[in-house]
Figure 1 (cartoon, rainbow, N blue to C red):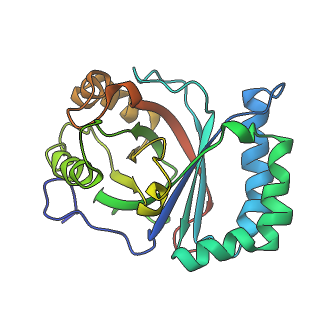
Figure 2: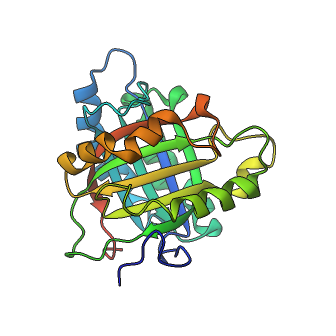
Length: 246
């Protein structure tokens, strides 16, 4: 049986101890096409992928599909999987990061606009198809909880709510919610409390989801979220380090 929404307790995939999302925009004067080309073909391969602690890594570049909650700033997202806190700290102290990936950022990215969120992922529906994994079309949804809700109530409520969305998710072959890690609340509030990600076989299936009940609910806003801070964009993923390669 494929683990899914409504199929019992959501499961965590072993490799997804820390699932980091990095949303980025081009530096002034750099076109969107040049930005994503440099990110995918140079920065990701020549710098970021050489950080030894990164277990999995992909870059997803924006698709021209209207979501009704469009986030116009970013042209892409990176997803990075790390084993644990110790390896994350080691990665940020590594020469591959300090003299490599970090030093390269000003060449292509408006680093002052970059949004990074470290999350604890809950996989609601996992992919069980052909291996290696194909490159999915994805819907990213950034979520902020309603102001009167505690962090725990938001997390529990969202996980429970999404168990009812198996059919409404409109053909998603993978579905997860990454909840902002507790450490991000130590000195204040992260900009978002969660990143929801729905993966589809192709852009047509994603567009079908946006045209259906899930898309309508996204545009209307969910009861547990602050509808002023629900943003989304569609993207095409490109694997740099696939599951099982490292």
